[in-house]
Image 1 (cartoon, rainbow, N blue to C red):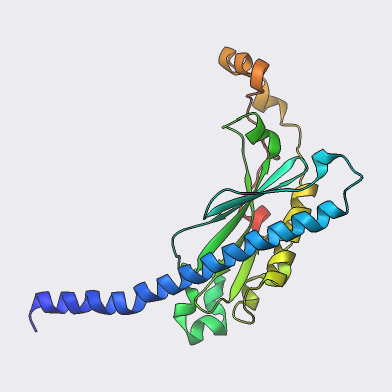
Image 2 (image 1 turned 60 degrees about the vertical axis):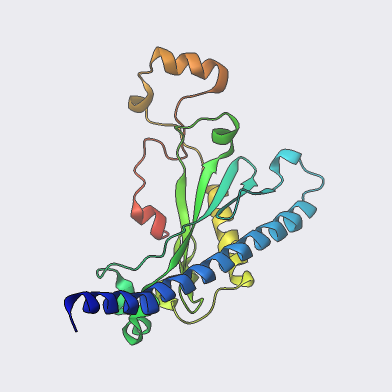
Length: 232
């Protein structure tokens, strides 16, 4: 077999194995994201039914933003759900490789990702494009629809449980509820004086009309991966 044939055979092998695997993972992740949308709609109806006598501004509002993005307004917060269109594999330093599930079948490591970000409602309302949002959870789904979750208050769904159950609407509801609860208690803090003591004329001119100074729930405070991946 000449060199060209060997290269072509390798390409065929990759297309028949890894590419098909990634497509399967993508399909499962997209199916899961559709379930996320359904659960969000159900949560919106259920909770709003208990808030009929309250201020309309604190009620939930679900908005489908497209195939890969959807959002839930929770009082003064926005939870943005975003499905990444690519498939990922974990680096070799990740602790997930220590699990029997991975050792038995390395293909289990290929996952789609659904991210959950927390933004301030006013960031969108007043078009404050410099405002910050925070990743508070991300859902990993593989070829078997097995899953795990990294994020705040998601202890019951972490990587050590990967491979033990399939993702479903009941689980998604709990994951989403945990994210909602955390975002409501994750309050906006006054930024340190040193971070805001100087402002440009442009910033203050725009602020007069649309409040343009950068805002985030932890602006000026350290917010690293440890804050996202585990409760303290």
